[in-house]
Length: 264
Image 1 (cartoon, one colour):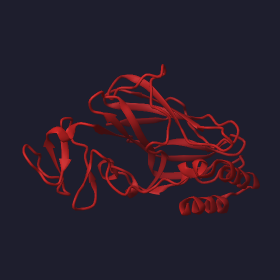
Image 2: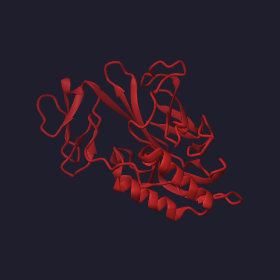
Image 3: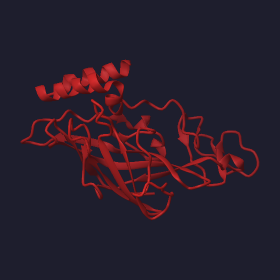
Image 4: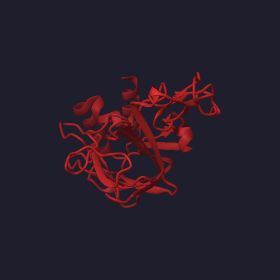
C-alpha cells in the first residue's frame, strides 16, 4: 500500500497538465492497486526457482536441461560460478527452465497522453526472460523491458507522464543479461493473460511461431491495456506492443510486430 501511495504521489507531482492529473486519479479511484500495479514493480527478494543465489548475493542460472543449480555440489557437477554456484546432473533439472534474450541496439516504445497520442518516446536496449516447462516445452511466463533507458517528451502534444523506471540491479538475471542503468519493466511476472498461439494453443520454447499475450490494467473494468506479439526462432525474437485501451489510453504503443529485436 505504501508503494502504491508513493507512486500515486509521484505521478500527481509529475503530471504536467490537468488532464494527466485527472487520468492518474481515475486510475487510482476506479482501478485501485490493479490500475497502478504495473507502475510499481516489486524488487525480487530471492532468485527464481531455476536459479541459485551465490555467495556474492547474485542469482546464477539457469543450468542446462537435465541439471540443476546448487551451492552444495554432489555427483557430476560443473566448475563453480563466481558466486560459488554449480550446475549438477540430476532430477533437480525437472520443472521450469528460463531462457534469456537481449537486444544489441537501442529501440523504442511510446507512452500515450490522455488523447491517445504518442506524446513520449522511451528508448533502451530490450531484454526478455522466458519461463518454460522443461517437460512439455510450453512457455509459461515472461518478463520484458528496456535497459539503459532514456525518455523524451515529443513536441506538439499534450504531455504524458514519465514512464516509471527501476535500477537494473532489481531485475531477475540482471548479471547474466548485463543490464545497466535504469530499466523500464514493461511486462512483469504473472501480470498478463496466457501466452498462446493465435488459435489459443500453448506455444513451445524454441519453436518458429508467433505468440501473443495481454498485460496492464485500466480503471472502470476496461481490462488489459496492451497487446504484445512476438515471433521467435531458437535464436531470435522479434515483436512489439499495441495500446488496446481506447478509453483511458493507459497502454503503451510501438510498431506492433517489429519494434524489438532480441537474440539469445
